[in-house]
Every structure is written in structure tokens, then in C-alpha cells.
Length: 110
Image (tube, rainbow, N blue to C red; front, side, top):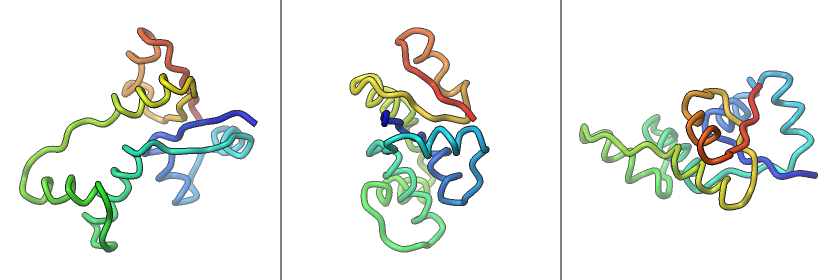
């Protein structure tokens, strides 16, 4: 079984049971994980929607509530995948196209 890192939007679709069939099949055949960044983003999303207390995402949510923008985390997700030599399941190719083109990040789309 091969490893596959899920980007936040793919993890979110999985939680909502709305994955495209092709991506669902690939995920089902893989050892799935998410980066710490995705954990933070999902926690932030839950906090912004008043789903309870979170971890690192709570700080980012608080900054958003104060009107401050949070930094893009796609770079960290890509870096985690590249360091570990793992493919990244994504839906928005444009977010990671540069990492694929210039750094060899393997992208899995649905």
C-alpha cells in the first residue's frame, strides 16, 4: 500500500462524503495521511463555524476574526510531501502546479 497525503480540500470532501469516484478509489487503495497544516486548517474552519475548541487552527481563526489574513499553507503541505517523497491528492491543480513543475511534487487529482 502506498502513502498519499490529502490536501485540506480533499480531506474536507472526504469528511462530507463528496469525493469524486476516481479520487475515492485512489484514496481507498492508499495509506492516507494529512499534514499538520491540514489539521490546523480544518481546526480553524471548525472554530470559525463554532464547532468547539481546536488546536493550532484556533490562533489562525482568531486572527481572521480580528480582520487579519492568515498565511497560505500550501507551501508547507507541498514541502511535507516533497520531504517524505509522497504524492499529494488535490482538486485545485493551480495551487500546486509550480511545486509539481519546478520541484517534482506528484499530484493526484480526481
